[in-house]
Length: 266
Image (cartoon, rainbow, N blue to C red):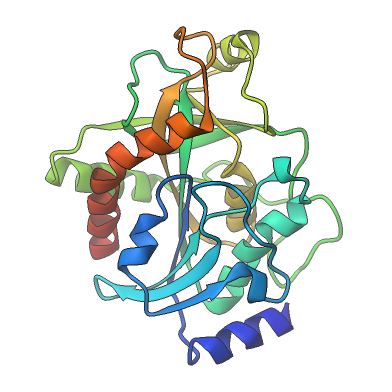
C-alpha cells in the first residue's frame, strides 16, 4: 500500500482529503464538475480498472464547499470476478490518505413497494447476502481490530444530517435497509420476497463490502441509494442496466444538490 500512497501523493501535490465519496452507476457526473486532480484507476498501483457502463474509473480530488474531497468515479464489483480484497482496497487507501468520513452511493432496486424510481434513500443498515466478507484473511492491525463492532455502520448523526439537508432542499427522502447480493444476475421474485420478509427496503450489488471495510477502519459512513427500478416481481417491467442509468440520470440533480449540502454541513 505504501507504493499506492506515494504514487497518489506525487500526482496530487500531497493533497490530504478529509471526506471520501464513492459514486455509483449513473452518478459519476458529480466528479466531472469538481475536479482538481484526477488519476485513472489503471495507473494507480494496486487499483483495478473499472469496466462497468456508467463507471468512468478514476480517482478525483477537489475542494468542495471548503472540504477536501477524494471521489471514486465508479467502483469495481465482486461480480466482475475481483476478490473482496481488490474491490475494497481503495477504501483502505482513502483511510491512509486521511479520509475520516465516507459517503457511499449506489443505484438500487426497490423492495419497499412505497418507493418509486428516482427516489433517494438514506441507508440506515444493511444485510450482507453476498456470501462472503471483505475482512476474511489476515488482519491488518494498523487499520482496525480483528472483530469490529457492526451495530452502527451508518452513523445515526450522519443519517440525521442527511435528512436535515434534504428537508432544507425540499427533497423527499426515503430511509431504509440495503440488501446486497453478489450479482451479476438480478434477484428472482422469490429472493426479493425473502429480502422483504427479513426487512430489506432496497437491493443492489455493491456498497456493503466498502461499508464493512470503512467501518472496520474507523471511518464515519453515510450511504445514499438512488432507487432505479422496482425489484424483480414487484412490477412486470423487465430489468436492465440501461434502465438503471436512465433513472439515475433523472435523479442526478437532486443527488448533487443533496451531496453538496451535506458537504457544506459536515
